[in-house]
Length: 194
Image 1: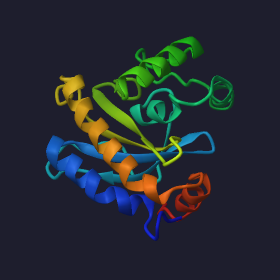
Image 2: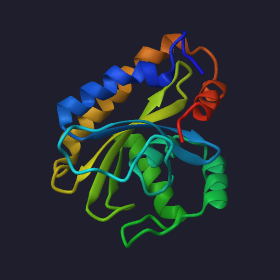
Image 3: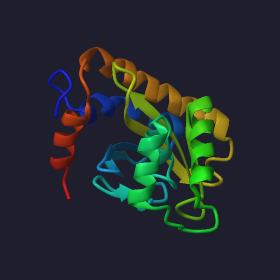
């Protein structure tokens, strides 16, 4: 439940706050739990259009920047197993609906270092997400920014800031995480408010 006496959310809070202030967009922190993306923190700037997200929300792996950032580095067999269990629900015409397309997206995410949801879950909303790694190099969480299509027109420059935040959190937790994070994160999920 804690990394060096502090939860992942506690370590992430100042980084997420700074990312929200720098971008003026809603910021999310999520983990992969039992094949689903679960939001464990959310910071929204004042006076912006509210997004349909909340702490504890479960989201798709294939149609969100957080989900794709979390699964992009999984071994092929593990990714195939998740797809088999969760399916590729189509939310609109932009949603990834084939294994092949999702695998190609994962390869691109590995190369770029970030994932994009370009109106794949909700028309008019874009998100950019980046993975957070533990000391063993495993992806244990993801950070994203979300906003309207207009707010996220320049994806590469916005992505740089998200990757920087994810890298900072990775560096912050790496010395504290010499063992696998899943047991720690598992306890964290059950402590979330409903």
